[in-house]
Image (cartoon, rainbow, N blue to C red; front, side):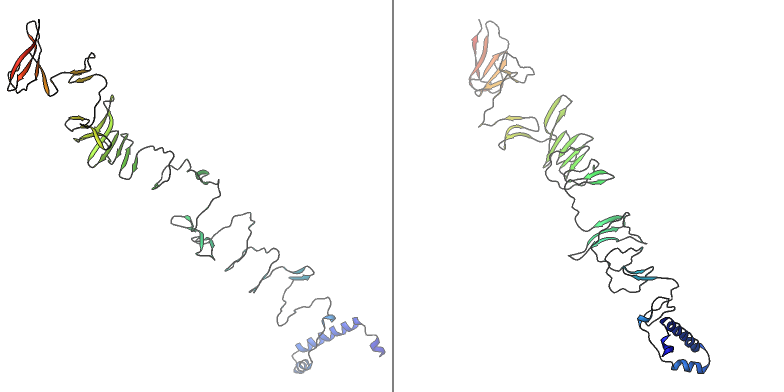
Length: 367
């Protein structure tokens, strides 16, 4: 009892350590009796309360193997700290703060993401064809991806800009909500809405019905080859409006076609292709204001009507000659005026009996 009284905790630790070294050495010897003795030594256990401090070398268990030569894992009140962590499989992982990695390779990423980066997102690899952004989950997949042949970005949905924003090319406005940019000079428009103003430089074609030639400055409606400043062609008839010899304007038909000036879908002035002119109709009146000259270039200003030639008045012909007719057929009341009046002769002759040439009597003897 006295000997047991002097065995302290320190001595006990030293005795256990020495006993362990001896047993380990005995187990390693090649003598068969030593191996038998080691086999018969029962396994013992120590409570965790008996281990404090020091280093357990070559520690191993069924689930843990320690072969590190320096500290790799530290556990303190702040958590578990590992210098390098290599994991073959993680079933579930929850990160409450920051996860920093150089390369992240995943088959699927589901996250509500906020990007705060100093460099752009880069799509790289042997081929970037089809790389981009996909939105799935409602209807067909929405796409914004890169495509080639030619290189371009493909977008499967509409693109809606906020009011007042502009699409630019090389920092030059291409289009905004109200107008095209100043560099848009060529288009293949097929339909437009309401136009407030239109300025066209050069030629213009509207279907097969309207053509303007910038070389001849001629506009054709219904014809591709206008024969005047303005040509309107329909049913084989071309109506032209233009100028002649730089001093006269004209309107009419280009070929041998009649020309009518109409109101109420009724011809009021008709000009035949040969030059005959019809003014008005029996149901209408024709009023001439000013001096009317017939077959004269310069009507006499002292008259309202200047006729160079015979006239027929109330179905009676009025001629001018030096004597009464000797041929032709005349009716009663026809008059021939003396073109060379002189004293003792008549002012003219009147037909008093029709015939060829009929019976004529003088009237108005000149004193």
